[in-house]
Image (cartoon, rainbow, N blue to C red; front, side, top):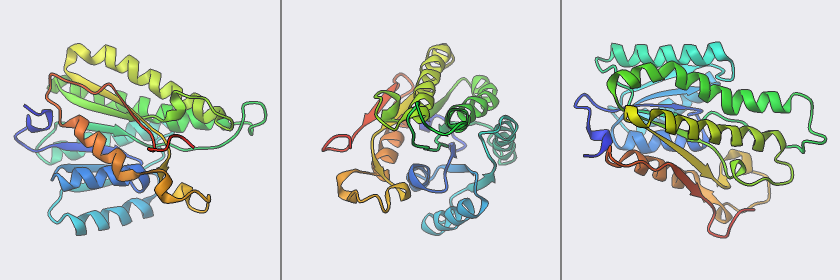
Length: 248
């Protein structure tokens, strides 16, 4: 049986960094499947705009939004409480899928990047996922199931000039995923780490790179959705996606 078909009350999916880019694409893919969405973003304007579009494109979808800076521990914990309150109030306290997608890229080499780059990258790219996951794990443990998806990066696996603190933080997120996987195996909770290469999002506009040279956000969304569709007896531990012509 597909893991997302286990709950007769519907499927609850929480996505961070959901207002644009990969998060927005994943929200669209899960909305297309009719799942209930709990979307988090730092920007109230952006997440509400995304919600308007999603409700228009997928009428009848259950969708709630939350605003907060998840790089702050208390804000991440507050987001976790909000998700649990929303699912409980909807009559289905389960949390089936958590996608830790919130992230930021600040370029620089270790030797000369601005002071504070490492701290900021760790807070946004690692601590947000760590604290939100810890806030939601008790519910997944109670229900004896769930799927945690951490959006890492090719930079987690391959160092490159200018990667600096970003690569370090994404490598830490990869390690977090591996530790979670080992810890949660007996509990029936699956953990997937996703390692995308270059994907066409707003951050590439004006870069001179042609959109057709790199991946579409929908490519990553489709693979993440497919991973959640596996039976409860299987898990995609690592998903590596690169542009067909290779990394830039």
